Length: 243
Image (cartoon, rainbow, N blue to C red):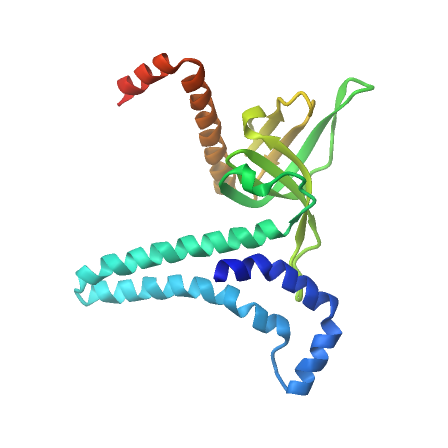
């Protein structure tokens, strides 16, 4: 139920923002202190409170010596956290516009956030690379691809930003290069996208390291998968030795 509500939240934001004067007239007629946006955001704010509630209950149950009950409460807290994460991801994905592929075909969404990106594009006529200005993009990292999107408008009082598709790199056609000064370079090896290279960095060193950790993991998984297909016996023997 919440997941469906979160998915539709960008649509409701757009409708209310477009017809703000109309809904404000209704608010005045009803004598309400809260406008429609204040009411529509409440379920979004409520969901994380359930997780906090379970955490508080678990703390007091443990303090009261009711350890047998803590296990079930902590499991409920874990599940609630998963629901919050899934609902938030669904809401963010609905804000992504003009991506022509199928989002459901990109696999699990592993990470998404704002990154400062510098595109390094090859100029075919000059046979040289042209470094673009740094810009803040919203980046979605899936199991199968990484999608870069422009942020259309900052979050305002009555609306949230939308994301317009800019480019993407398939994970099985991507190379990672770690750079100095807390940055990393993603290179496309896709012959249909020659010269697509993007330097990225997050707001903090810890966040950048988190992106690097997850990207390394999915690239390693891709590498292991290819080895398992091309050299199954050798790959199986190596796995047995490691275990």
